[in-house]
Length: 247
Ligand SMILES: [Fe+2]
Ligand SMILES: [Fe+2]
Image: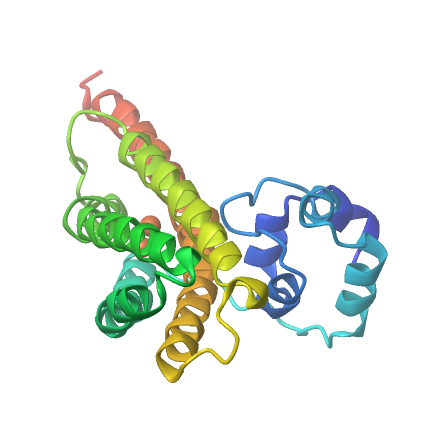
């Protein structure tokens, strides 16, 4: 690792270049997805973590000799739908059953669990709606942008518009997970929490971890590739009439 270069590099770029860093960022609670533009030092400051400790952990981690090339946007969209979107829906199926039950039984004595059920309901609705908009609008648009002989790739406005909306949604989702984490901290949960609470909290943690990776792939890899592909296509469109013109 080039420590000097990496300290000035946005953490999202570090994550994009080397996936082995992700477990370290997760372990230290560093936001590499929604705030991927922060440097490593800024991310440490925000998380209240010692930068030297993070650098030490990174130095200890064996580095891959070869960085595999990134997948195409089409492959990434397919993978995100098949893994992260499917996983989120599975988690919601489990949580839909658990969270209203624990709020009803334990809410009167632990009001944090009543708030948890409200925050969860908003998060669920937001994520389900967001994923449908990606699957029906943005991802097909990105796949078309990548299609070699298709000059017309989408509506007559920039792909940045839906991308900005998605990034805004991601920020809201991250804020909801932060609230959920606070509401489910050990000191907020009832002593001797029942199995339903333990199962709900563990599913929420799994979903949060997976959502970090999910948002990282979209914010730091897929969306910049979409913006670049749109620019490249616009450049081809501008050149095409001149090339076809008769002298
Ligand atoms: Fe997504
Ligand atoms: Fe998304």
